[in-house]
Image 1 (cartoon, rainbow, N blue to C red):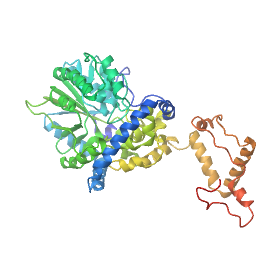
Image 2 (cartoon, rainbow, N blue to C red; image 1 turned 60 degrees about the vertical axis):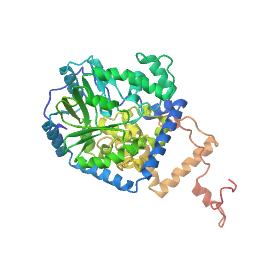
Image 3 (cartoon, rainbow, N blue to C red; image 1 turned 45 degrees about the vertical axis):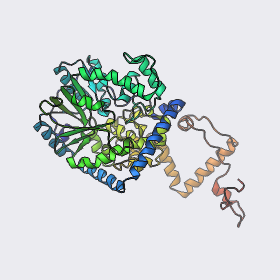
Image 4 (cartoon, helix red, strand yellow; image 1 turned 180 degrees about the horizontal axis):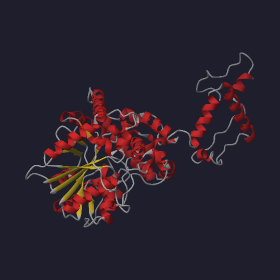
Length: 507
């Protein structure tokens, strides 16, 4: 990893250094089973995702060149991945030339240590944060807390999640699983100096959060952000948001630290023209992003006077090495794939047990962590999809998520050498062996028909392992008493099979 990006050698990280994992919790099937029982959460999700989805369809339909924009975004991302090492070096040179400092972090532990050292050097005991997936990925808040530094989330949804001791369940709207009354209860019980008689009126909730955050903005000396884009040509870093709280973080504190995944780089400033049209429409269904903040290094007497850019790998070069899976690095974090996914809409983001939920998380998380670990929870994520393809149709940069899912499923089912298939892999191999030969397929069908006669037409609700992998979530259908082939062979010649009957015909 370090050789690929030209990173310098660093001392080994301490064994006791606390690092929160990229993913948490059980396998997706287990977590999804619990999530499906939460009717309120499903109602909240359905209402929110459909609203965003409808807005997105409306604003994208206005552009006659929308598909051309998608093609352009896809091409820029593909070109970036091909030239990533040289673009990162160009970005480092541009940021340094404009007064910034660039740090390279191989993993979460190294990134956390770098940020902590910067905060300590600034003499700060608390920091304000812009909404950032990268800092969630490395568990920065938890690490800073262990080091005695309080990290205050300033994005409204992230603030709700933080006050509730919860985890985000959506890339764009982290508190999408909460309704207004739940938010009111969280504010009333967890927020300092909350107004008396606070209701669930959106304006009242927003004003309560505004008063709470204003004091933090004015006293913070250090801010931490992520970035939507980093321009290699100029060293410009860009953050897009909808509230303006991020701009307060990016302009008021003296020291600014931006933790940015290496895949966020784009070659030229002009490339932003494409993404500034794709991202708002795909994420919030808006024609233009309400707040777009860009900065290039340090400007004397204007904004932060100390800027640190932490370029984060944390498994990205591993993903880059996979010719099919690397497409996950094209993601611009718009969440459009999540808003159209029938699986996500019913299970919510927590079921994925990852900082990155939904279809994109199902292909990104396993690659960042590495499927070679054979971790059951990570390996289950590529199977959290119906492969309907709606995510590909919605993706503004045309990431072929279904193809990547199938590819990662194959990797998850086999060890590195492919010599030791898993239980599911064994089952699929047996099915392939039966279906690849007419004779074997005929005998397999007759075996099922025999089992159907033995069972007497009963539905099977429980089977021992490995059959329990099926019956844990669904019943075994009633098995036929004879195969279709045998039934067809016993029919007198010239007798209709009834295949041409309409929907109203006899069963």
